Structures are given as C-alpha cells and as structure tokens.
Length: 470
Ligand code: NAD
Image 1 (cartoon, rainbow, N blue to C red):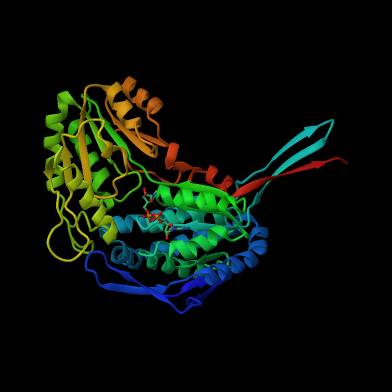
Image 2 (cartoon, rainbow, N blue to C red; image 1 turned 60 degrees about the vertical axis):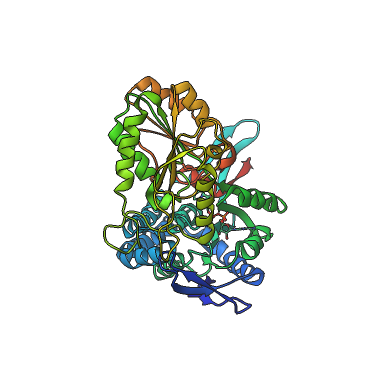
C-alpha cells in the first residue's frame, strides 16, 4: 500500500519500503512506504492547504463526512478486521470489536459536531466579551501498535470535528488497516489533505512531524520514554501536546467480592489483546483470606484460554505483536522465577509466531520492584494483601496512574477506591471498558490531557477573546 498525502496515494520520496509481518505466522502481509523527513513535510503542506476551507465549513457538514465514513467502515468491518488480525495478531472477535469501536467514535463526534459553543459576557466597562473556540490548524497524531484503529479514531474524531486537519502516523508494524480506513474517508467525501496518513520509522518520520513548525498540536500515544522525548521536542516550537502513555493498572479484590466474577474480570482484563492494552489489569491485589479460592478460579479461567492464530475459530488469545515485546516478556518471567511461583504458563510454545502462554504468577512480595513497572504482555502477578489500606498503598506505589479497579459489594470500600486510587479511570466491579463518552487518560507519568468525551473537542481548539464596543 502507499501513503495518503493530499488525497493521493504516494510512495516515499526515498523510494524505500518496509514490510508488515503477520505476528502469528511470520509471513509478510504487505509493504508500505518507509517515509522520512520529506514525506512528513509534504503531508504537513497538504494538511496546511486543506485547513482553511475545512475549518470554514459549517460544523454539521464536517460531522456528516464522519457519519458517512462510519457507515462505510461498518459495511467493510469484515475486511478491515481481517487486515487488523493479520498485522496486529489479535483474535478476529477483538479486531471486529475494534473496527466497530472506531466507527462508534466517529459517530459520537459527528453527533457532537454542532455543539462546540463559545461564551459571551456583557460588561458595562469593556463592552461585550466573546470567547470563540477556534481550531488549532494542522495536528499530528502518533499511534502505537496495540489498538491501532481505535486509537486513530480517538484522535481523528475530535480533531476533524473541531475543524483541524491531521497528519496521522501509525506504528510501523500496524499501518495497513489505518491506510484502508483512509481510503474510506476519501470515498465518504473527505476533502483532499484533511486527513493524511504517513508511514515510516518513529525516530525519523515521527520526529519530523513533532519538530515541524507548522504542526500546532501533537497527540501522542505510546511509551513513557518516547512520550517524554516527544513532549521535550514539541516544546521547541510551542505545540499543544496530549500524551497518552503507559499504565500498570492495579485490580483490588476485596474479601466480600464475587470471586467468580472477579476471576473472570482478571483473566479478561489481562489476556485481552495478549495483555497489550494500556489499561489491562497488570497486577492483582487480593485479600489474603480469599486468596486461595480466587487463585483457583483464576487458574481455571486462564487454563481455558485457547492460544493461536487470531483467524482460527475459538482462539481467545493471539501472539504478541513483535519480537521485542516477546523478548521483554520472557525476561520479566525469568527475572522473577526465583522469588515467585509460576501457576500457569511461563513459556513460549514451540513453532512460529510471537506466542507466549497466558501466565499467572504468585508469591511476589507486595513491594517487589517488578510490580512497579508496566508489563506489556500476557503475564499476571497475583499478590496477597491484608486489607484495603495495604492494597491502596501498593496500588499507588508506582509512577503510573492510568486505570485501576476495585472489586467489592461494599459501597464504603468502593467509594474509598474511587477517592484514593491514583488513576485517570477507576472502575468498580469491572475493568477495561471505555466507550467514547468516557474521558480517557492518566495521572502522574501516565500522561497529560484526555481523549474521548465531549471535552476532547476543546483540546483541539484554542480560545480567541473578542472585546467589542459599539
Ligand atoms: P512507542 O512509544 O514505541 O511508539 C508509539 C509511536 O511513536 C509509534 O508510532 C512510533 O513509531 C512513534 N515514535 C517512536 N519514536 C518517535 C519519535 N522520536 N518521535 C515521534 N514518534 C515516535 O509505543 P508502542 O510500543 O507502539 O506502544 C505501547 C505503549 O503505548 C505502551 O506503553 C502502552 O501502555 C502505551 N499505550 C497507551 C495508551 C493510552 O491511551 N494511555 C493506549 C495504548 C498504548
């Protein structure tokens, strides 16, 4: 496939290409341009030219284009989901949900398109003060590989609805579905240059977008280290920056919780997307007096997960997306083998693909350093705590603060979790779900800013104050 720049499909200026590999089979499933500095410049130029006419459209007209795209995406769900499985590795059922989720995000923002109001105050001394919300201009969206389609929607939806144009850069291992969706935007009547999709390495192409003086906002989703670098670099040209970074989400299971429901929630919350979700359940803190029963139930749930190629029927967990991720998971498990017990899994199966078995670990002390870092794969540590005080202190004892959940029937405990857990999202008796109405993002090192919800529209605008006297 080629890149989408100014409404046309283009090769990289250098002519270089990169291969996209199926993580389950190691077969090449496509090639895309390996773009660089020049291509980033061409995409920003195209987005710059498209900006004024797009921003001048009545907001409802912009919304209609998003609605039409959502219709086409829903019609093409089967094809898009199969492409997503081939490049990302997730099971078809999850890929289908993700594609539909993308359409849902577009529909949500299309519905909000006419509701971006300004403010007005009448004063005797200064006359009428009007605060308008103006789009920012050209925005860059930088996307990771774990939920490539959904996260693209979280950026495209509010940016375009608010009247901005965008240059989107998918991760190098997962560009194909996003490019296919770019084609549907064109078919839905999106004017050339409003959405540009460029492919290539983050260190060159991504960097070129973040340093480009015309780009007014960078919305970045990825690792903390990359995010910090992006924020530092974007500051050189005073860009707006939203950072959606990593998480190490705790799940607290109290002794009054429905343990069967909690065990299902832990398995679903961790092994969904092969553990590669920013808000996956990454650590379980369970009260000691119910720990044995909870572990039994969780072991049962984990053993029932069928691992395989995401296109095969009945497969519940696919491979990791890439070799580096698999190596990191192997190291994480080897590093704790001496101090912890591996209850289930703990190795990669024979054969091709970046597979790793769904793995449960127990016996780690509550202050184990490994629990403070993000583990991005199918490994779940279950740690015993005496009470809610110890659980909340352990949950908060990390630099991350993306999501957290508490499982209990006691309203007081639930309220305590909502109040004291340091996270952008706290779930009670559930984990992971985040529909477009939910402001999504982290506290502490998990990021700055929020995506989704009506306020995300404001984050793609800036106020302009008008003081008018007659
Ligand atoms: P990553 O930081 O390696 O890459 C993310 C994107 O940044 C890719 O497109 C990459 O090419 C690009 N990039 C790399 N270097 C760059 C540079 N110098 N300038 C500009 N762009 C550059 O992250 P990843 O491995 O793709 O994704 C996994 C991480 O993303 C995990 O930490 C996960 O928790 C996090 N994540 C967070 C959220 C959230 O909403 N908070 C959602 C999904 C994933």
